[in-house]
Image (cartoon, rainbow, N blue to C red; front, top):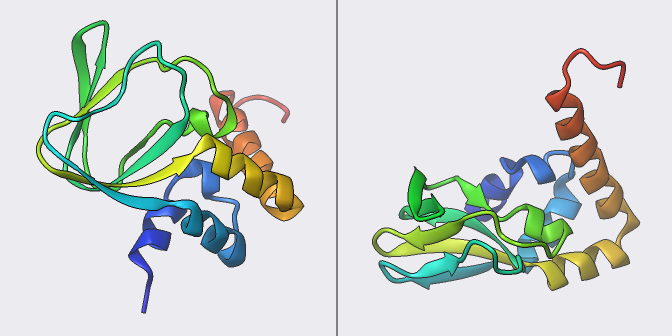
Length: 139
């Protein structure tokens, strides 16, 4: 039987180069969290320390007080936080009760430090993404 948590994580571009075992280790880092309506997951300008994957519910993304979009099940936010604790570029607020998978920067980096295989898979995913930004490049 398929693991819904793994299925969701497999769709995140940062994890696309991870095989079954590395993805399972990443899955073990992901805490399932239920949050109430109107909960602020992150604030624009705060230091990023978590990645969120929406299992159920909705999250409104705002920048400078204006709504940019609304995310739903299967969508994710904060993936840069896994690689760098840098300022958030937007605010995210739940719209209704929401179930999330949450991975912290600290936990993810500890996993990367302990597993060169996972580190290389993540670097490869980043490289694939960067190449996609310049489709006519020589690579």
